[in-house]
Length: 490
Image 1 (tube, rainbow, N blue to C red):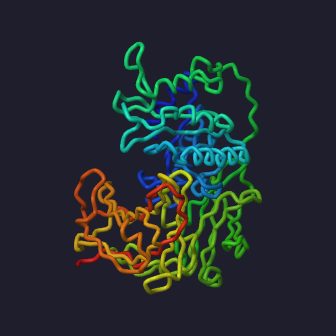
Image 2: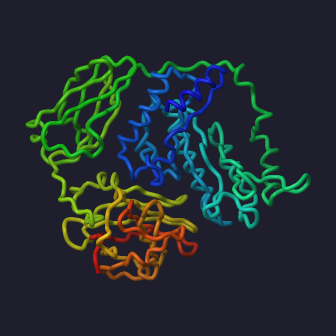
Image 3: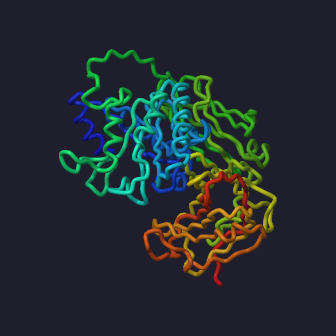
């Protein structure tokens, strides 16, 4: 951040504004700040810390801060899950790529739906909405020199963007003629195969390029006053287990006169309240052991109220002991106390455009209290998956993954995924997905094929995933069941 501040200080001195978009695509699993690597409150707090450090400590005021999870987005709740708060965000955006575009896939429809979610949220919060990163991907590349399947993609995208209140539309860079995101001129009178559609896009009245842009330095802007006070929880962390007393801490900003902490149940009913002691911008309090024990075993919310309004909230597990640690167990779905919110906080969803997946606890199981219901909806060219972080589990004493599965007979492409040292390794169970008999299956590590041709390292397993990809052109809405997922020695 000091390097960022040094660079931005030069821009501020030159009266140059910029949009800063840290920690993007946070609902994915590919960055260290992603959903499989940190809790919602940990993510929110690193974003908040970043803004407060650059703005308040370094005195930088020429930056607008953008929040941009990965799309597609289903609804506002989906968008809010890791949102740092109105006091820290100026631009409301999303990143969404059209991966391996097919001529009749449903990506554009999902793109429009996600823009609507973002535009509605931005309007409600008085923020600027934007498409913060977008484009086409073919395999591990951006565009390809030849064989692009949607030659009029730019105009298709414009038809969806123009009716929305998006401030800008950002595509990535052209690094060279093999890694590029916009078509380019090959020679003076000949362009790459997408160039004609891009020229049409350029000439449309709806598109604005640099030469058409107004001089922002001459714009007269009246901004509403910032919210007077806010607070966010430093402790407890999301899904902390609370068995005795509960220390509380919140960082305050602005004019925060009246601060209190509240425990509510998942229906929003207040269970306990504590007044805060405020000192140098930090509010503290504590719920005593007898108060916590008197609430029984439940998933609850801890809230900090500033000036009478809920400013931040995190879920906690009251009076719920942790199951015995087993580094070889991926999941037996018995430690969620019947709470689907806790399950959803453990698994990160990853879906294609217009597709959905909802992990839920189920009585379809292989023993114990619960199993997993993998409820999915996929369309042509679509996919839906869930991922659980394993934080470099050491399975070096094992040679296979074992799980109980009850397939749905739909015959879609069912993928079991393990990530080792940053590379995804997969087994295709499509033949099994065409059946309906519940069974325990054992998958040797040797059967997992690396996407980059690497070798699976059982001593460093980062995550486990279940994916279902469409085979055919029909939309499939169904459910499969899983349980007792673990590493074994055959």
